Amino acid sequence: MTLSIGTAAPDFELSDQNGNKVSLSSFKGKKNVVLLFIPFAFTGTCTGELCAMRDDLSSFQNDNVELLAVSCDSMFTQRVWAEQEGYKFPVLADFWPHGAVAQAYGIFDEARGCALRGTFVIDKEGAIRWSVVNGLGDARSNDDYKAALAAL
Image 1 (cartoon, rainbow, N blue to C red):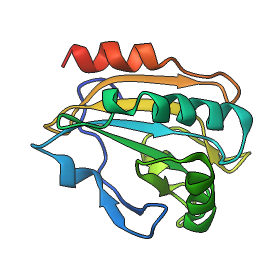
Image 2 (image 1 turned 30 degrees about the vertical axis):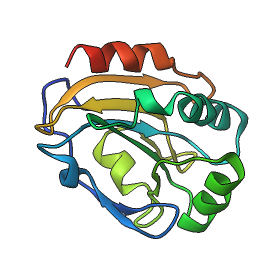
Image 3 (image 1 turned 90 degrees about the vertical axis):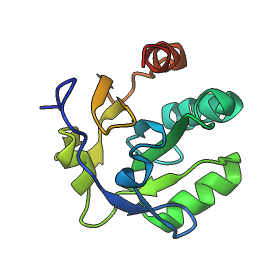
Image 4 (image 1 turned 180 degrees about the horizontal axis):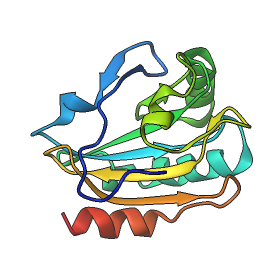
């Protein structure tokens, strides 16, 4: 069961593709966050979604917003994928304990060992203001994220 709108987003600290620690709480009071869970690196739908974010990055990573992509792949997998695709935003590894952050957000698929395709828009105070969870093969719309951010 995913988290409700208005609830505090669970804090976490994960390594990005370069081994840097990134915590959700580090953005509190500073930036809204688009927290984008993807099932697996190097898969068609996931790559397509992140490339669309990459190609419109100024809408999702600027003085007011931070984009954080998360999957249960290892940091090393995230690094190769980010380098190959030119991702200039944090791609976080929810690898160990496996899927702990996805579990905290209620979107971990135990049978497949991955996160569902979920997105959470979190305001500067750390509250969830918008969310969507799609099936593993169902891409999300960047326009929905833009509308949610504009409403903050």
